[in-house]
Length: 213
Image (cartoon, rainbow, N blue to C red):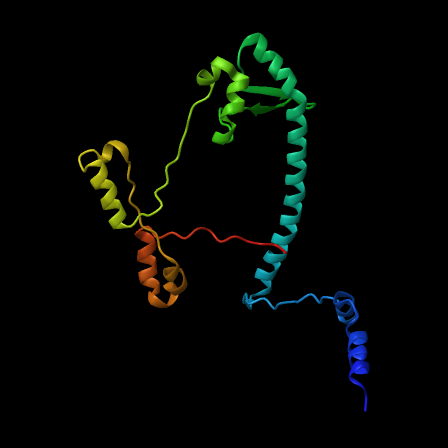
């Protein structure tokens, strides 16, 4: 019979390992799951298939042209900006300029009076740069969002401000929009005639997007 000491020695020997190393020996390479798409594939005519193929072809050309357009636009703006800035210093602000091309025509470039939003945390830095001119060149803007638009909360707001003063502080635009249930059930809950009347009454779904993969 094996002694207790020998048994303990055997257990110790068996347990003297690095668990991570052992697991690594049994690890299998991760297999990419190819989930089957649940989007239904329609049975269509060859004419529609041809249009789908044409859309794919045009989309590829469009993406290439848009990329080229963006690159050329950025390059020409970078090139002419110093010239336009010098013109603004000499003759006053110019929001638009024209660039002649090699064919006797020209293209226009315009700078809008719109800027990206600047976070309130940057006010100190802006004030240090602009100094006393800060308030002359920068305007405060704020958007207040009501977290809860339930009727109960709205009553509390009206009560706090006062019904007679509510319109002094708030501008209300009341609209309707179909909900998700309508989107899912519109083809079964309403007849074609009813859906036509709903569209005439203002129900207009956004245009569907086409994705080319």
